[in-house]
Image (cartoon, rainbow, N blue to C red; front, side, top):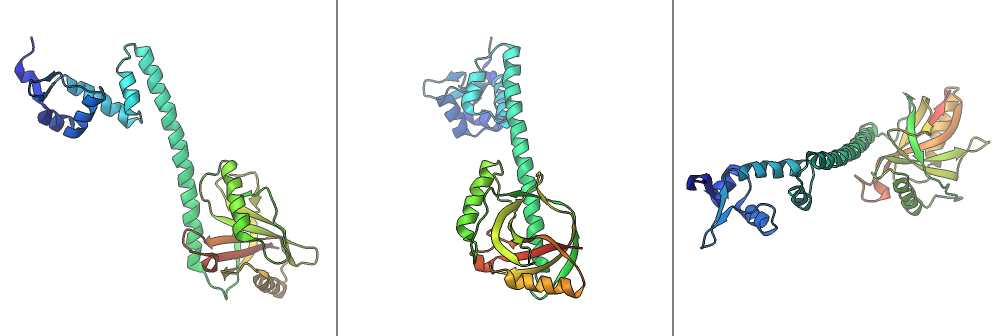
Length: 266
């Protein structure tokens, strides 16, 4: 036989359970956790044993279940069904872990890229040894005899990134071809993002590099790099890479972008 002392007012139950009074009223309304008794005046009373039910609700909320799912759980009586339900939640948790793991890697790449701003000096050219850098390239090349239509082409490129499974704003850049005469050509300009892993990459090696602010016509910087290489009897290899190190996360428009221009040498 139940004793009156086994019952708690809604205020007492809220304090012990850690659930706010208005939330308990809502749980009652949606038939998730109803008071054991309601007085003639409408006062709600909960039994001590219902604190176990609260622990179950907390548990399933903590592993990501919705209130509707928790209500469905309350109808389950067989351990096998509970195991199946928890297994489904475990799989959801694992997917979230993978998602946040990818996000963390993206944030690390953005931090690394933005830190490059500390070295910004438009007058300086340096020689730097780099490891291989994974890159994801856009499917298209952008051809323009003067300047690539950056805003349009970059928007199209981001759509390609999302379609390929790169759902985050990774650090971006573009790669420009050097023709047979040793001149940089805007023909076959390709956008890229730096990613944690890729089958395509910027090769490991020694690079000469310089910086530029808000300038899509990189011919001036390329001439500086060419002259620097010739003076030191270095041979330039491959394409010109342009990393946007001060990008849309910091800059309001392209005039405020800071780029690092680099090309491999031997």
